[in-house]
Length: 121
Image 1 (cartoon, rainbow, N blue to C red):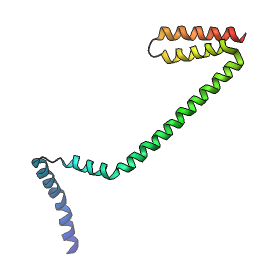
Image 2: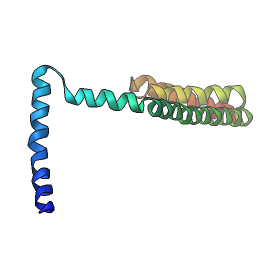
Image 3: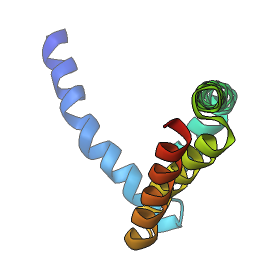
Image 4: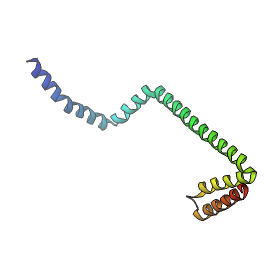
């Protein structure tokens, strides 16, 4: 008998929940927003910690990219001097401009490659 009563109670939960949801909506309370605000208030500290962790990870990758660029610049300077470094940087800027204006990017690449070839001969 207890199992049957529990089954009936479980069967009535969904319509009762929908009825309460409808009453709250008709009064002007958005239950979804209420649940979201409650969850955000309870999880606020965890979201802040996650944002800080994400910032640290992004800073690490940004600093790693900067360090790699400086290392490559030093290698280019040692291999070709200031003219070669200027050619490498001009080629890099051409790569940055490639999506915006392809003709200027191709010109920057050609000039950068020519400077590099002149510096390394």
